[in-house]
Amino acid sequence: MRRPPAHLATAAAILISCAGAACSSTPSAHADGSPGDGASGAQMVSVPAGAFMMGCNSAVDTSCNPDESPYHSVTLDAFSIDKTEVTAAAYSACIAAGACLAIQGLPSDEVPVHDMTLANAMAYCAWAGKRLPTEAEWEKAARGTDGRIYPWGNDAPTCDKAVFGTCATAPAAVGGRAAGASPYGALDMAGNVAEWVSDFYADGYYASSPASNPPGPSTGTDHVDRGGWYRSSAAQVRVSFREANATDTAIDYIGFRCAL
Image (cartoon, rainbow, N blue to C red; front, side, top):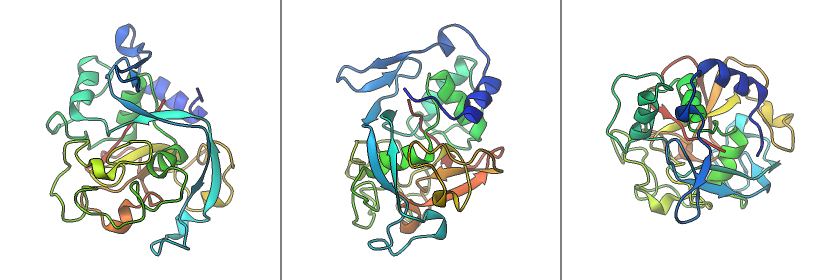
């Protein structure tokens, strides 16, 4: 199991301080053999070790932004990632355990929790015995190894595949767009809510990032969020699209999922 970047491990230790079962969960498996975690019971999908192409391939994608270049090969260790975005119900359990801060305006149970600062997301993942995915892990989980533009392939998004554009006026319950699943079975990786990842943001990072397990820049003022949200355009729910936001602000359209 690969350790999180040092700056995230340190931050998580500062953010969360508790003892007992609430903070000592160990990975477990669901009845179908899929990985899960002991604290929240979230189902996860497995992503095997190996290389994939990260960034925007201008040969097939006409919406590339400068910070999505160059299109480059990245090799990752094996990891698991939550099948869906973390729900309000799961986050409420973390609040009840005393490991997460309460937030105003929690949505209904199966809707992804949002209005999340990066610290809130990290505290939840730590309680669940996990961590935020790196930007590279998030992108591989979303697109697989064939360089596709969207989780489901290269076809333009529609409302049966993603919650975006005019498909909804608020985040939808997680897991409702099976047609939009990624190659590994992760859901809602395009639209619904954007998702924090662990990396600091730098627009030129891809030009000098490590070829194996890139952790993101060591410092920065903003962190990356991925996947777009329910008001995003088709171009903003592409798997290579990158956005940056201040980490100490509760963004009303940003949620998260955890990795292991």
